[in-house]
Length: 637
Image 1 (tube, helix red, strand yellow):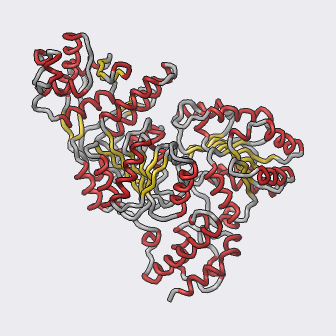
Image 2 (image 1 turned 180 degrees about the vertical axis):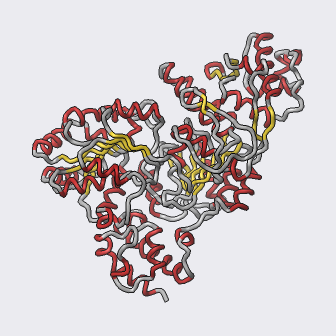
Image 3 (image 1 turned 90 degrees about the vertical axis):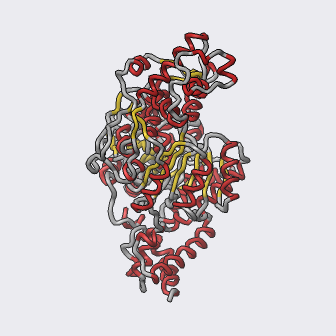
């Protein structure tokens, strides 16, 4: 099936084991990174079971755009697939339902809200009674968990599938779930007896860079212009206003950027998404409303101008880069205000205290990742319970951190050679003295005035700046006034972030983001806990990366090592593919991936037999496009 329909010579990673298990009627929970090939894990079993007379597979998918692209890709491969969603007219939906009940569809995609309606369940009942339900696939399964980063209440109702159709196998799939979210998926979907398949979370083709905010929009612009000019990317911002501002700034610098957020008119959002999927070198500036189900393989970078809420969100969003396996980059700028804003949102949410505490722990883990001086990849994988076996440790002190529930995550000595800390190890300074002076200032100010204050005011006191506010409250008389004059504001902000990351300091959102000591402050004040911090090395890290070449991104043509003639054939094939994609109203990569075109260009085929065996060129596509591909290739002299 894999070779005949999808044109791939072999399975990757655990795909074969998963598919064999599900084909045999077993339930499964699949955790596989973005770009790892999750969709094949249910598409192949659906085809196998349908050919064995076991009926139709229902795929629960949360996004209309994803349904459209996956169904289009299956049609291109010669598989009968359809979707039911709000983009269809009543007449079109009725036609799909008739085909469904006649058993003419192999895979049907539908949103969770539709799957659990009485009308749809009645149709499933009819199929089940006739032995025509082969499989339920629940995509983006982390949406069922309140501990996950994309909780959707409608996913909770999917327990009805097990309750009504216990004999029909189910496969739940996600790219992102820590141990807590994983357990919640199993319980909420009643998959406790399902076999679990957990792939490595590592995306070795992605380089990770995290920089301290100085002038974030200019930092972003330099990152794009120096490393990703003319390439597709995604820039995430926290607010709609920020999205509009950044998109406008990039456009003003000649970058083909588009905004995307929930405040835009729906037709404009769809138009922008379609352009991003179908055109080359578009940079989408978006809130997290954009992203889930984005299958575009040639996104070369994902940038965060604001810190996400947790590592799960960061991992899934950065995972949208480099789905084709070629080098890609994850870049983030963060600052103290990001931490304050995220903590305020947590504290002001109507959730229970236990849930808030879990969210704080997840934010702490992301902050620890940002502040780390050791390997980013090691820390990222450790969060998901995976040990990275890389190169021997680089010189420098080990640094621990906190996991998703506040527990310690030990530092692991391996290095990946493809993150900013590994390529250009940061200089580290001992911030223990500065931390003790900061905490002492917070304590003494509160003792003197009975009030708490924000970070800026506390730093002014410590550095001996007699501002109007300092004079107004009489804080020049505090015993710590001016004793930290040797520390820069940048250094002190780094100390504050580190104290927050370790739980030695917190922000009271209900009291205007004032700083508050915690039980963990005592160990720092007593000198029992050291605070080691990274120096600002963003410029050096970028220079080191470019010099090393680890982040040098290449097109599929260059990666394939094509000759001059091969590159000409590749360009001609891309132009032909764009025409076909427009005719079929599909993204170009649904027709053929760049890697497939590069392989064709390298082979320089002259007759149909020479196209056989090229990865991504299945029987249906060979039949549909073989002669046209040969025509295009042979037209290049």
